[in-house]
Length: 332
Image 1 (tube, helix red, strand yellow):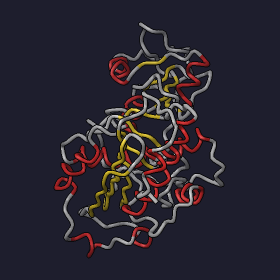
Image 2 (image 1 turned 60 degrees about the vertical axis):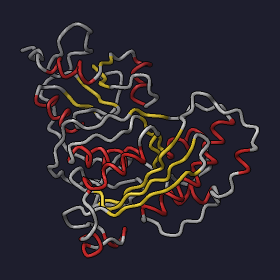
Image 3 (image 1 turned 180 degrees about the horizontal axis):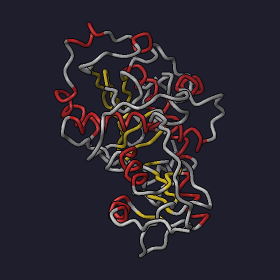
């Protein structure tokens, strides 16, 4: 149990100085997984630098719309009707997140949902880095049968009482994160931290739902490994002219890949690239002309491959400027 603080305190572990000084273990329940879905409950367990619990917090949130899959999260319209709006709890939520690394299971989902709610409220979430416990489990090479929260909990002997209840899911994750953090420290492991960029431009338009979601939510209709719904884009009509050369213009037909968080919502950025005549690639290969990322030092698979292949890399701001003057495709 988390109440036992003596073991970690007496541990001979040499704590890496580069590790964060505090964590906010977060879980949100939502009306669904699409980018126009809303948060209906949120929980935060605040942990110190060694993973010890400082306090916890939980709130319901009125999504001002249908609550979605009640059979999963159990929150009906009647229960949520008297709950505060997100804007009403935004400041208290922010106080729980401030100056801490956001920790979540399938963290990109939780972060994007939180970032979108703050954007709607015309505010900014005070989160600069996140840590996904799925990624940490992979780094630790834990012998898990899959990457579900229940499997991580079972590995560390944590009892889950109310699955898909934000407070209990956050508790379970906090209990599983502490031994994971200590194992990482003992092994001198570099934590898989990723930069978080608040949204400055977004859209709430719905998108087609295709495939299956492989994260912790369990909702159908989403592609594996991503919180974002699949979108089928038209094929690029232009041939690939090769790699982007620094200092020159982009050219129609170039293959562009994106990695990490962007201030402009990814779908909007991809739409603009497509409209300019570029080929938006979902993966990175030797044929990729350019990688756009705000975090070139991260260890994402696309960034690693870009280094291996020598693929040019630019940040979001530079890419935005390049989009303003894309060279037409050559006419044969």
